[in-house]
Image 1 (cartoon, chains in turn green, yellow):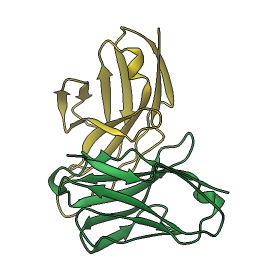
Image 2 (cartoon, one colour):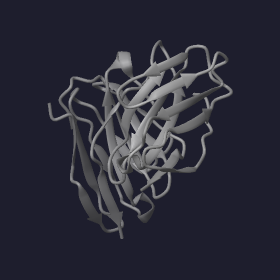
Image 3 (cartoon, helix red, strand yellow):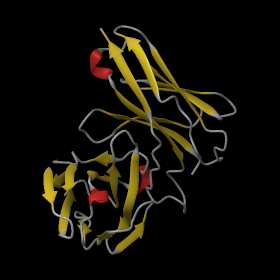
Image 4 (tube, each protein chain N blue to C red):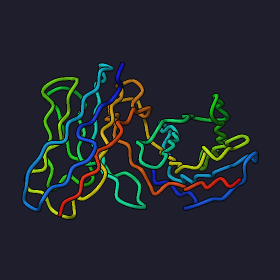
Amino acid sequence: NAGVTQTPKFQVLKTGQSMTLQCAQDMNHEYMSWYRQDPGMGLRLIHYSVGAGITDQGEVPNGYNVSRSTTEDFPLRLLSAAPSQTSVYFCASTKREASYEQYFGPGTRLTVT
Amino acid sequence: LAKTTQPISMDSYEGQEVNITCSHNNIATNDYITWYQQFPSQGPRFIIQGYKTKVTNEVASLFIPADRKSSTLSLPRVSLSDTAVYYCLVGSPHGSSNTGKLIFGQGTTLQVKP
């Protein structure tokens, strides 16, 4: 199993540009989440999904959209990038019956200039 | 989700046992205590989870007193490679309120020195 994969690893955007951060898992996990981590801080939940077709907002959802059309994929879309979205983004997945044992991807480091 | 409090940072030396305590005064009956480890430039990694008393695995031990208002993560004989941020999380991984949401605090930065 590849586990949780994220692409790209690094990305630089200009203010106002849009992009999609990709996340995929091959463990047939129902739950998937997106977090952002800013320097010296813990992770903050952006959006999460408890299954295909079901998504909900986390602590910091503004400026981000998600969809979950398949169990495997959970892309995160930035509609109009802002410098405040410069951060490291982590995707995670877990199975429903062990939801606090989550598997994290390697992260995407995003810089918005 | 119960709020947790843990030290911002700790220093240790190689070969020592390290104990990181987490306070969670408002822990609910159905809540479990979970610890994650995060190395620089990597995603967090699940270490251990417990409900009461003591849990041990190949990486760490978790001690939970009877009142469950705190917990202690114990790392035996740390090495330089244990330098990381350690997060304590409290919540219920079961039942109708289970959504897989994890709420991370700032964590404890452990620096292991030679």
